Structures are given as structure tokens and as C-alpha cells.
Picture 1 (cartoon, one colour):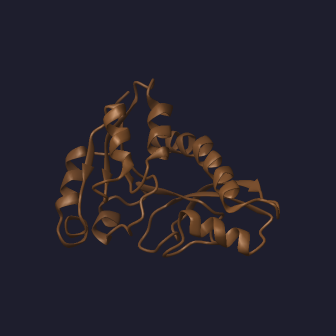
Picture 2 (tube, rainbow, N blue to C red):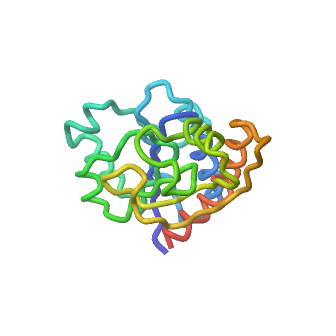
Picture 3 (tube, rainbow, N blue to C red):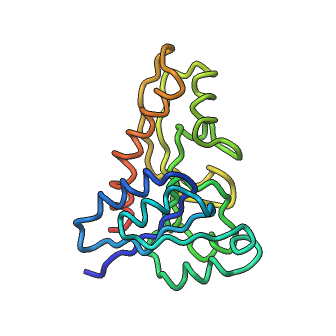
Length: 189
């Protein structure tokens, strides 16, 4: 069986990147080709060093105004591109080159609490402010609009009125850690 190649994008600490790397660390059929980040000081790069994964930084110009990042992606030959806490909108040329090959995890039950600016703490605060009784994660394909691609998988967790925003975030992170690697594996095979 040909080894499947994952390419991960992240903007922050990289906890999902590490979770995915640990999930596949004993799999001879999956390799993480690289982790790309748009932040020079992103903690995900420290995790990459520790996990012995190639980590690459790129700037906004390379991503949006040239084909530089696209050429790097082409050279890495990914079978699947995974957005693991990546906050920039994916450019059209990437979406066209990799249709149904770019997936994202969103920290809410889409279509609720999606769109530009709805990430991390902002989502969990909105869930609390709206007195939602449940929240969760949505794993979806990436298209040209924020959080509007076809839904692949959703997982739910209860929210109580006493839950703080941090407690809601913790519940959602647990769902990400449990479900995201398994869904990635299904998409690869």
C-alpha cells in the first residue's frame, strides 16, 4: 500500500497537530509531509521540532499574491491537506488545485457560529452568550467561503448554563482530539 501523505496547516499552539501526529505515529501507511504556518513565532513550530516534523513558515504575500506556497504544496504531494487551527482563508488557486482534498475542523456545530472572525474563544463565547444547550465540532471540506464547505462529520457535547467559556472550550477540544484523527484516517483510506 502506498504511504498516504498529510500536509497540515496551523496558526497557533499546534495541539491538534500534535494529536494527529501521535495518532499516526505508528502507522506505516501515513506520514506527515510537513506543517505550514502563517506565524513566525507559532508554538506549533516548537512542537514540530520536538516531533521531528518539517515545519515551514510563510507570509501573507507568499500565500495570497504568488504561487510560492502552492508550489511548496505541489512538491510535498499531499493526499490530504488538513487545517488544524489555521485562521486564514484558503486562496482560490489552492481550492481549485485540491478539490475535496482540504479539510477543516470548526469548534461549533455549523452552520451555527461560523464565518469570518468565528474561531476559538469567539465561538465559545457566542455559544455561551446564546445560551446553547449543546455545541461541538464540525469537520468539513474547505471551499471559497469561511465554514461553508460540505460537512463530513459532526460531534456534540452538552453545555450547561454554569459552564464557563474555558470549560466549553475544553469540551470542544476533547471532541477535536477524539474525532479529527479518525475522520482524517477514513478520508485517506
